[in-house]
Image 1 (cartoon, rainbow, N blue to C red):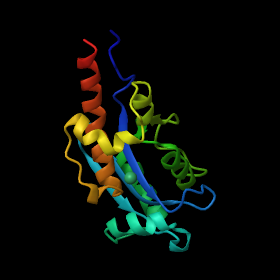
Image 2: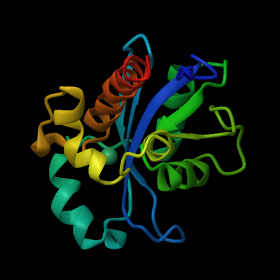
Image 3: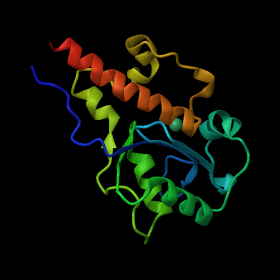
Image 4: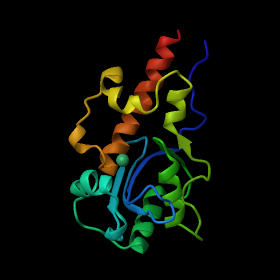
Length: 176
Ligand SMILES: [Mg+2]
């Protein structure tokens, strides 16, 4: 049987919250990152609250800690944390995370390797509904999920890290 073996261990578990699903208007509100060794970074960025959609107002804003920093300062802290070895960004349904990441670093060198990795593709190719998974993964992977914490970028990034390793382990054991 085919073993699930990720191409690289040089990865960063990554989640953002952002203000809109319209990429022309939206921007990053908060960033959560977790390295495979567990080191983590959480930042909130200053943003234009006029752009926020209703979902964001109801589900994201209440989970912010309320200490936003400038985008310039955020980029500096992100670069320090990511370092110079260009990890792959691993995110769950990553298109908005990646687009808003590129808006944040527009015209500057991308701290990540330029190819993003979407966790939902791993689910899709193992006959798991990528959307339902978020609701069912606790049961599937024996992970305790606190609904009230979801949409906090650091919580989501930590959940992604746990899910990534547990799912790979589960798939590999299932295929033996
Ligand atoms: Mg999130």
